[in-house]
Length: 305
Image 1 (spheres, rainbow, N blue to C red):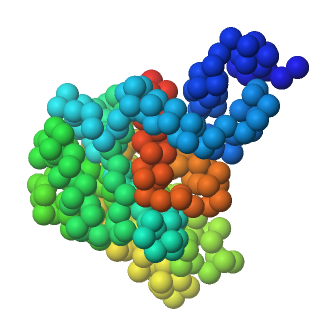
Image 2 (cartoon, rainbow, N blue to C red):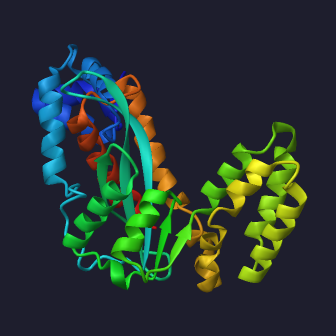
């Protein structure tokens, strides 16, 4: 016997209209894409559900379940620490029919203890450039985020975002993500030397002060200048911005030295891409799924963190 959320599908089919069955399936499947929803609907109803009905139910849920991530007011939101990063996905153009990479810029806020985490919003853009980040940050300000009062911005280290922050919030400290820096350094390290480079990078994470961090960087520069010059260049690029977290209480270091807290959201986003044959059908489809995924994470994960 086939069960859905512990309920025999025959019971679901007998006592629910088709629309209610679809709604029920969309909810219990955690909105994990049309392929899974279609498969469950066929098992319960014995026939394929029209895509228009699934779309209608999906959009209705978005409107009624407080998943409007980009429209909720943020006046009372905790934003002592603001985490900013982007995830790249393939999106099909409605005009040309061509599929190209586009980036979803995402912002997450948390209080001075690293708690009360919440995704503030997202924006689909063509590039992670200054203009895109500026427009996104201004949209957050309009909804209530006070950038000037933010104690620290944790960023991926891209030039476009750093320039936008310099323009909009020049007095706010910035921490560039250590994970991004480490990955970029290893990317430029010869394969046979990656293990040793990784051990040296781990020593940076163990540093208890800016002096110790920069002392280790200096030692690595001397050791690797000849063996991996490109890796050293990557490591040294704006390296002072990767030490800002050391100015804050030790208890929050692990939460503010990287943008890793957004990785969970990005993993969810990437998982949904596969049900769309590795791309979203159009920008509206991308926005709908990001709205659902990030709103769902706010409800189930970040609220409880």
